[in-house]
Length: 233
Figure 1 (cartoon, helix red, strand yellow):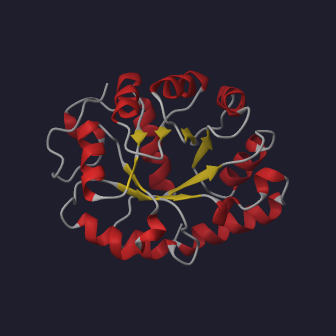
Figure 2 (cartoon, one colour):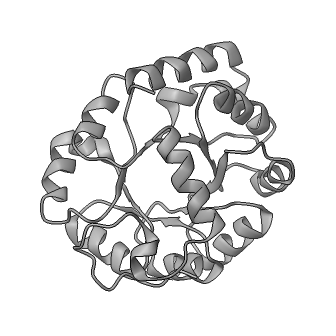
């Protein structure tokens, strides 16, 4: 099981820097983001189409998907999809705000957790459960707090508020903390964030569009292919 980071300013390749053996969940997320540094964020008014959308994204080259807990019926969808998830796909739960939600998501099949804020309690629960945690943070203080609490990576949110230059600025004093900018990043902006040092990108509506609400899966596949082509994947 991972432990909180004792030396947060030392460059690291992830949780193994603590001396703990990375879990299969950590290795799975790392491999998925190495193949394509994108986490697709699926937020919808119903969980009905999450499986179809995820299958389409994976067929297009996306290897990490986040089912947000604000979606009605999402735990059942997580449970059903994870029971027969295709190899090479990292399936996580997003908008996790309490330790109880974290536990429920992992029990339903989530292999990593993403939070909107810097919740030390949720981070600690993720560490206890042995899964990667990507807490939301924006300021250097929040980022460092999340990392010291045991975050695997830190979600820089809302990324569009400061853009790639803000990412570059916060990475200067905190070079060893893997950051995943999220929020308001389209295909045109994505390369600049990666050039500024992003480990991966959290992408919602610019990638998923209306697919979760009945929109065209063909159009989704085209957006995903164009997005990955734009970042050289």
